[in-house]
Image (cartoon, rainbow, N blue to C red; front, side):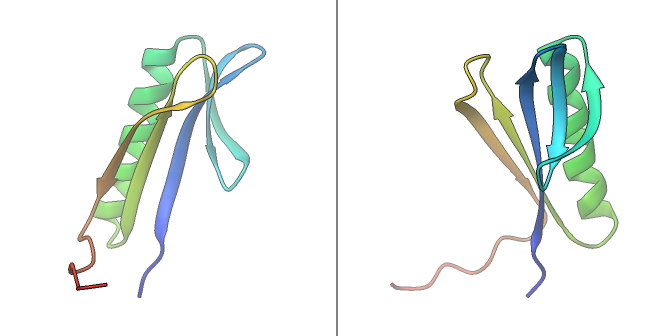
Length: 78
């Protein structure tokens, strides 16, 4: 089963950044720009044949929203 590639839009000391596996992918001056970049990266992961996810954080660092791209696993009784 393919793992989902996760991109986080998080606040930084110089504005906002997008991270993947705790590594900075890109830096941005505004939250809106960082969120757009995280969403685009998640969609690009899906277009490359995988699964993508954008995790959008608030300015205090807590998660505001998560968006997934690509097929989610089937729901099964647990």
